Image (cartoon, rainbow, N blue to C red; front, side):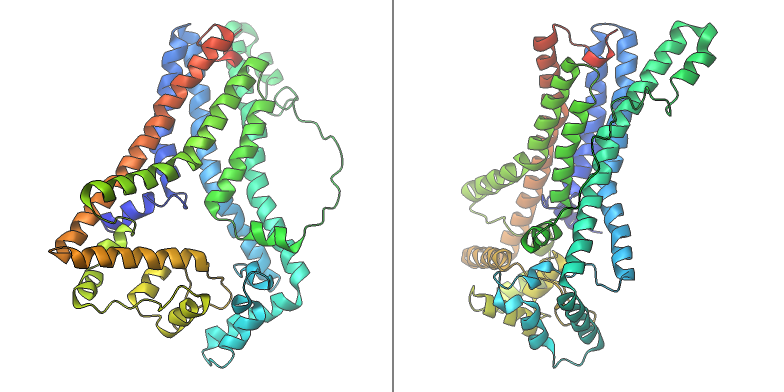
Length: 429
């Protein structure tokens, strides 16, 4: 794995990789240290409790949040495959209003004369989904709710009471060593005390989902599902708070975290790229793995870069199908904008987002135009790669600073304003 590949991964805000870097390696340690420092203003005992609770909260939550959705989806995909369906087939192909050129019928017609075995198997998968649309939609809906609900319930409704129960148990043990055995028994994690906030309000009823709803949720990215689970986590954290002041602080913290994790980095990236274009007259919208590719630079110098002849859906699909070995197609596949089978043919079970491909094509065109007008194409590309890398690292740095320092400090400032104390409200005796 090259440095450009690593920078590309952590700079792609549509994937979980920037969240992993910020959450595990920057945000969590900083939040733990700030929690300890703020609670030390009241007492060492509060600081010790706050440090332990925040450590458990940050790292266990991160493990579930970052790994829970992919793990649940992987298990769900195995169950769907056992039912005889291809779990990654796009439901957008069943929605004819989206694109007649990419419906199930259109793809079957487009690829039916290709004799490659994997293509014929893919068409068989499409035919089965077409003939069992309702059953397949139901399976994908269940997969979505399992992938978002299970991690959310664990993070938001189970982990906090267990964490609080541990604090209460340790405090009780410290206060009265003589009755430690009895205290441990009464404050066991399996006791009703740890789960006193859980109540089953009613028996869930069968819910009917429309095809458009299922199609929408089935095509959400992992990072989108993480944002949804983060919203559920906010509700869980607030509802399981030990008192209303802790609820206020949790709401402040979680809402701020959602904004800084999923909204702010996108705008920071756009701002940095625009600034670079203005200051250095360099288009840095292309991914670093493209800018680092020698064949790409050579092709520009020779004037042989092939692109779809227009932005129409037909021309883009025709290009991807007829020229899978072109640099444009290869990079689109590498960046997961299009999928190809082992035989080299485009996977007819996958939907191609034409809007995204048009934007991708324009980024190529703008870069090539600027590079050709430069005095040295190779140096221009190298400079663009460095600037893009610096922008990505700057984005990670700025967003991490906001998440790891500014938000926790603002949170404790809010806490002081509301409660008159810097210490965590739930830890006060």
